[in-house]
Amino acid sequence: VWAENIAVTPTGSSFDLCIGEERYRCHTKLLGELNIRNIVLAASVCLKLGLSMKQIARGVEKIEPVEHRLQLISRPNGITVIDDAFNSNIRGAETAMKVLKEFPGRRIIVTPGMVELGAEEEKLNKQVGTIVADCVDIAILVGGKHTAPIAEGMSERGFNPNNMIVVKALNEAVTWINENSQSGDVI
Image (cartoon, rainbow, N blue to C red):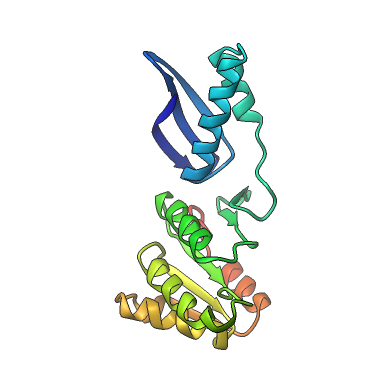
């Protein structure tokens, strides 16, 4: 059992669930390769228990994301928000950036960086910056202290400094988004 033809859209992920020669198109609100792999594993168990591919596809469509973990939120103004607020490690940040990079349109990140990581915090935030630089068009960095290493990592990757906005607090980021976002943006 495997997935092929994975596509990410503002409504979630679509993929072909495959077993042998049989293919069934599935859609889920979940984002990210890891979630698709988990669905494939669950589908394998369901098939073993005797469920049909049609039944499995219906179940896949009903899966709801965990709050603040690559949670897809569509706004009526044509803006898509991916809420990954509980992300607190480099692997999760990299996964989130890979997801964001797959979306069409202007990609915007709002981040305070990763906090409470002890002696590794600066190094890991710089690493996040190198990842972010390859995946976004605009970076809104919340708070100068924690985000300085992110900005450094982004600069090392050649990110346009004019597209790096540093704000003191989240409410300033929200104001910037309200004043500058447009239909088709993914934040």
